[in-house]
Amino acid sequence: CWTHLGNAIGRSTDKFDNVLFHVLAEKRLHASLIPDGIHIPDYAFPTLSGTLGNRLLITTDAMSGAGAPVGKYRLCQHEITMGEDRIARTPEGRLAGSTLTPFDAVFNAAAMSGQHWQIFWDALSTRPAKWLGVDHRLEAGLEASFCIIETTPKPTLRETYLKGRRVYSAA
Image 1 (cartoon, rainbow, N blue to C red):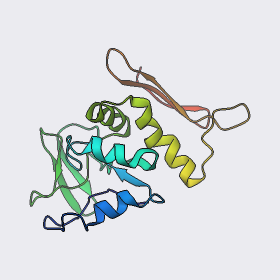
Image 2: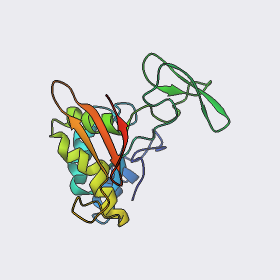
Image 3: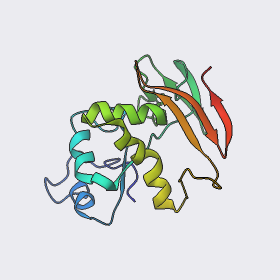
Image 4: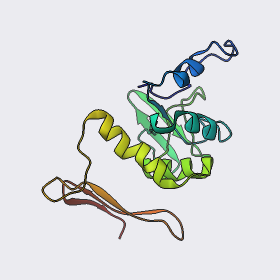
């Protein structure tokens, strides 16, 4: 699996003989994308996710400020600032992870690609679980870990259950 496809690739790379093309061409590789519009620009996401198809995994690279108010947060020994633009930066102004939550990642990916959100739910949850060998089925006798979501009028996470126990409720 290639984590954070495109991360740390130099700006002056060969037009076609570069790591992106090699990863996309290698059918045995999965690759994860961060659909926040920062790590992967909006215009690039549909092409990358479409090319990867069932090899696409969604991740967030979320740091402690994800889903939290604008402010200062700790990332190991570093103080990170999350600005009004929801971008986490080091004091030097470099990108410091993401403030994207997993739930928002799914719906961002759908909006960026024009595809149905369920495709990206699979890329965030069931596909990585299967790849890691985690039984993610929802059947009698198995541990029930799942989310209840509302998609209209806007996507909202209502409840999360872990091993049959509610661990989050929006109410």
